[in-house]
Amino acid sequence: KAKPKLLSDNGPCYVSNELKTYMKEDLKMKQVHGRPMHPKTQGKIERYHRTMKNVVKLNHFYHPEELVEALEKFVNNYNNRRYHESLNNLTPADVYFGRSEKIIEKRKR
Picture 1 (cartoon, rainbow, N blue to C red):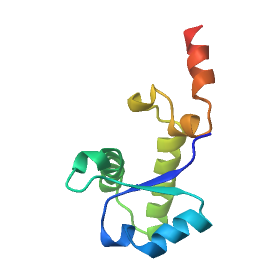
Picture 2 (picture 1 turned 60 degrees about the vertical axis):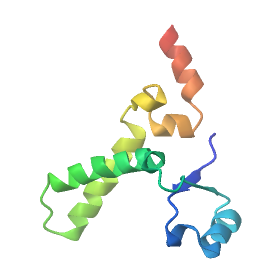
Picture 3 (picture 1 turned 45 degrees about the vertical axis):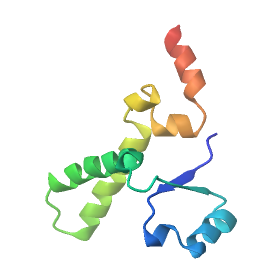
């Protein structure tokens, strides 16, 4: 199972000692900072945000609850059902929960 990490830029809210301590002690997560002045480092999350924004912009939400529901569905689909080329056509959940090798072996048969 992959250990979760937070990939962030170097904005003030991400380089504070408070966040560093919280991540390490409370969440037991590692924080990784992108290289300054190197936007490609943030490419995956920027792509995720662009995909999510497209879903939001293509719909009309009349109540906040509708937006929350749509975002929950988007996140569930993105993480559990949508295959990602960058992950060998696996879902992020497959990779996170350590199912990658088993799935790839099964495909080879």
